[in-house]
Length: 465
Image (tube, rainbow, N blue to C red; front, side):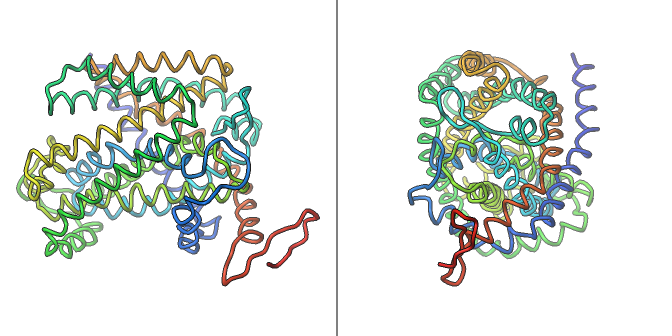
């Protein structure tokens, strides 16, 4: 077993660099091709997403744009934001945060493009609900049915593994905090998942739109209090981030030091895997949204990346760096850094409760949404009834994951990610011309600026309003 683990770890190491190059290079390409829209129109993106989330949606779809975005955000915002960031700092130092930011800024274009294509090529299933995602735009957009089938098949297996490791991590955290048996935790998680998923994407959307923003706000509020108590250290935090983004940092306390290559690598890796831009998961949720123009829903995808990485991950980074725990805690205990940081203000018990509660709800929503993603892959491959059967297979994966050691599955996940990212990014890049066309249509005919807007009438003529 140890030998097999070693081989899998080596393969994972080999493919990680090309994978990061594809995601970063693809993000840069899309950013340039779309005219740096995420920077140029950022105020408009905010206005048409969170600024309009309580307005009635216009168009066809199954759930509201905010519910679709909350569902997609549920799969990306989670343990990675709380325990992934400390790992990046432990292995790459403060400078890794700079590269995490850079990846997020270009990743906004990648996720925007994915969501736009998801809505462009979505279709109705036998229940009359909208379904979409990479398997549909690979199939309908490129005409590559074989690649769409491969993507869906790998995603079905990936979700089984992902549900297992999510429940394993969650069970370990709760067991450590409250000494509840793992099997009880697994059954509790499964009960919640079944209860919510009975109503399909509509129930998932309603659940996600309440839980995800609430838990994110609670976590951010607690983080702000910690920062206020260490406000004098904040200027030094940003100096560390920018200085050591390009220069090596020496060992100090529990921190082992890092070369520039490690700083860049860990910052990019955590940024990519935190916001999931390029993985093809977000468009599956977004394709269900009520929206009459793909670009408008695409803005939600771009905002997700900003909120996930620039806001939530940065909060984690600042509390860790401003309190100095990154020097006191070694890499092998990196996941404890957020608790240690909050304990400087709230005490160990309250800090542990805050982090445990946040991870619990983030993980529950993540499991909920990834299981939905898996169902949609099964539906694409075998039809709607197969998706219901798959749901209960995933429930079994949740219980299995909560009760045992699954280090092999953890190692295999990185390899399976490659078989998801590569076909998705190929499709997104090859269909980028269609994304550019849809984006140009929006900013030509629907974009409001300086009190004026233009839109096309039924004859295709442009009217100024």
